[in-house]
Length: 388
View (cartoon, rainbow, N blue to C red):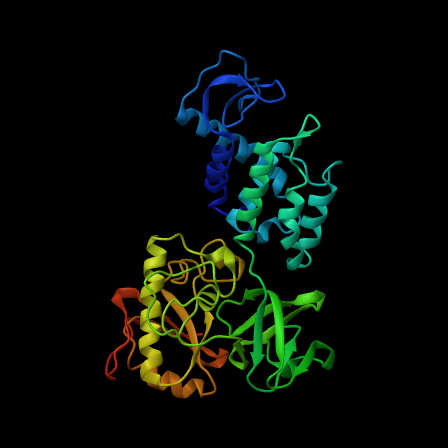
């Protein structure tokens, strides 16, 4: 993916919050005629002049047009831009609107350039961004309280997409692999043995669509490896006492249901957080209720290999077009420590939505199309069924 589809609207709101919308031209702190949300010239290149007057709708249109035509193309040369979520991209657009579209790599912007360049290689470096932003608070040689507040807010929004450190414990002797394929096809150099009970700490997890593997970037620059998810358990994953009234999407360990966490639903990717109250949040909560019903009836732990995959992340990981994962209506699941074939034979008679039999790949897909749900008694048929 390149620029997230929600970036433009998120950046526009952010810039308008910081700049305010002033409908009559005024002089900014360094004496430049300014109008709307900090415009000093119009999309046609004409400079703002004292005496100019505008309205809210036209102001927003001018801002969006300039961001789309001049600022976003400049941002897309930043290493790792295509892997940032809408909020982090919006923060960089806000910074660029304030200090210039081509700040990356320019003189005077060495610190933020280094954080962006190195963060694209090691995700934990991105945690230095709030401090880097805080260096750019001066205009005319003096620190401005408004810029200090702006940089603090930008840094806070940036960290909303920080995945943090994720710890996984091996449930059996397993491998770290250099490819998301069966280990028999890998040389000794392409795999690293991991003993049962061993802990790994990841700074980033990347899903592989229609596959029970995931890519993990290990903390401390220890490399990027594929793991087979049924062999691992997130540290600290424990059942919730009850269905939560509201989901805290900012906390990977928070429950979405009794037996499923935010981290599992989002596959430990903060860019995937649904908007509170959105249709996607509602369908996610419903499919997690059905997951809880399956878990109760199965009477054993069930793992997740895929959950909510909004676009453009779905496309980036190789997901099918119009996937039910995009709508928050699907989960890919597996029985922990049990036969996937036995699980399939049990579940296929009890699920009335979409059903994808990925036994050979280590998972079963379920979705809630046609009001699909779990039925405790065998005898129903899926609304659609297919093999992977």
